[in-house]
Length: 107
Image (cartoon, rainbow, N blue to C red):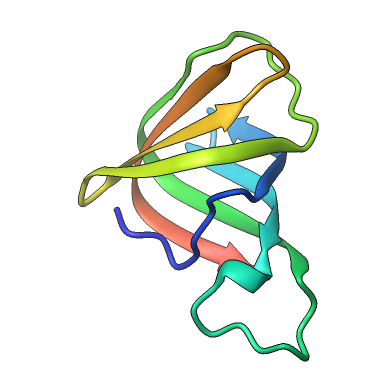
């Protein structure tokens, strides 16, 4: 799965998974200055939401975790529908694996 944005160093602010709707939404403080199309007149940081619909797989390596500006260390494309996000916690690095048929962005 290829994402529209470069998420490296951006912050995960919130993650909401609705199992009944088979939908995952991640609120991110995006490092806008790292984006290819960034212009100096734009804000360096912007809030975006990434929405994954028709979830086929959702795994997080830590249970009952509350996100609080956790830095994204890496995003790996596993296949055309799957990504792995590595993020920093207070003492460690953890992962989120998402496989979904649809993805869209709210900026």
